[in-house]
Image (tube, rainbow, N blue to C red; front, side, top):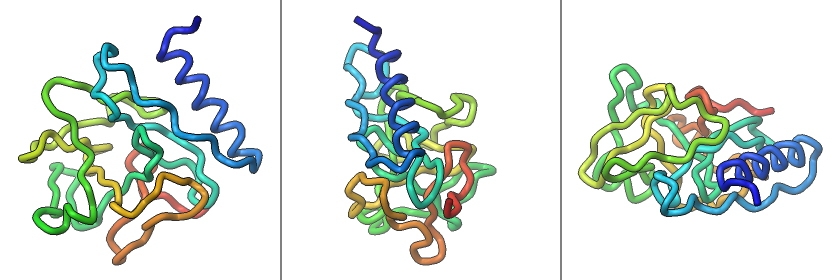
Length: 161
């Protein structure tokens, strides 16, 4: 039997190959095991989407977003209060680390919030949209309000493929 991290890496590689060929995307990989040292269910994955090219998703396959209202240097979030009801910060608690697949660990950081540490990518705070279902066949909320953009695995704004 393959180690968990290797089998997940192979699953993501297979997903990338299938979606690049136009096949329907496979379901998101399972959340990491509790004993892995990773935050349970929290991950940053580089995944090929149909309309946006390679994007970052969470462990459940939801597109991740960055906001032009935020700052990357220094990392700061302008989304507070009611904003977080729609744009949900991607957080980890304690010393747990997110599982990374296709995302450079050196680009991942943390921004303290009341509910835990919000993950950042190249300094940009990361969010998911409450209405995203986890599919990669559409553009989700990319470009919403002229401020919110799906994020690439390097922290850039996704561009239509």
